[in-house]
Length: 137
Image 1 (tube, rainbow, N blue to C red):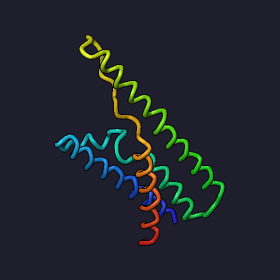
Image 2 (cartoon, helix red, strand yellow; image 1 turned 135 degrees about the vertical axis):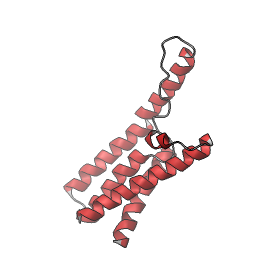
Image 3 (cartoon, rainbow, N blue to C red; image 1 turned 45 degrees about the horizontal axis):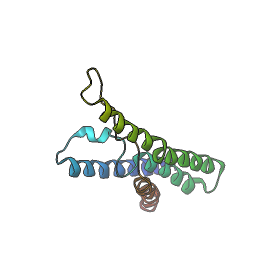
Image 4 (cartoon, one colour; image 1 turned 30 degrees about the vertical axis):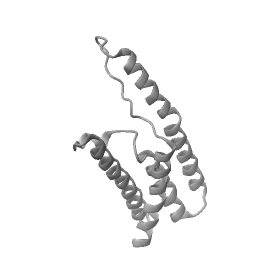
């Protein structure tokens, strides 16, 4: 049913965001609702979201054209998180160091990508939470 699909995806994403919020609070030693808007960090909520979508489609339809399409989408998102977005963050760190103290320079966001471990944890959440939702509902 569509409700299990929506609940499974939403629950996985919320769980990943909660873990990320707790990780940010632990790291920064303070609580800030804006932490929920941060990209990067443990776990990858983007990965959780697309993998949960793949799992829900698999649980609903089995192996299908839609399942294959969403699996390919998930692989693209995970590859982007590890490679393109991670490199962007590393470049931002370098640019920020070079431009530190320069008049008119706005600091670039440094935390935009993920390590392979962060993506793996996000994928694991994306697999497990929808399965639990389907078992409970």
